[in-house]
Amino acid sequence: MRILILALSLLFTGVPVRAQLRLSPDFVRLLETSGLDFFQPLDGRYTSQAYLKNDLLSADFIIRSRREKLEIRYNVFPDDPYSDSDDLPHIRAVQMATHLASNDDDSIITALALEDHDLGEERFNADWGKLFYFRPKSGFSIREHCQMLVLYKAGRGTVFVFYLFDEAGEALDRRFFSLAFLPGEGSDE
Image (cartoon, rainbow, N blue to C red):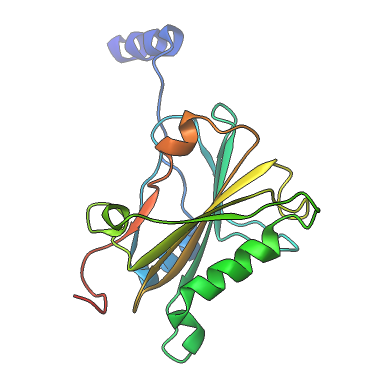
């Protein structure tokens, strides 16, 4: 009886109950294959979607929050030892940005190199990274803006994180570090 009263009081007092996102087995496999750690948001009422079929780029995993007005899509490309393209993440990143960015005359793509402290073991533990800003094609997203984070770790792979939003807010900064390469196993270690 006490447990029932406690549960009901928590329900009516507005204390948030946080649920863990359900990661699809395919996304978990991609994370493990690439040696990535995924950090789930514990606030913002995020929900997950295992997969999205899209004409321009299907997503491996998606989380979104109506409260924070933010959608985050993840695409993980594990390293392929038989492909030379895995050694060229900067070319793959520019190709992806130009493929997904609007072709309107007034469209601009901005690219920023990540700082060494962001690439280091304390943050992303990546060998290379870049941040792109652009207005996405309507076939990719109905949102006004896209911030595309690209991270690469030799011997592990390349990951793309797409932050889709209409107005930039604090949530964009809070969700920036949503994954990182795990220490060990890399070519530099």
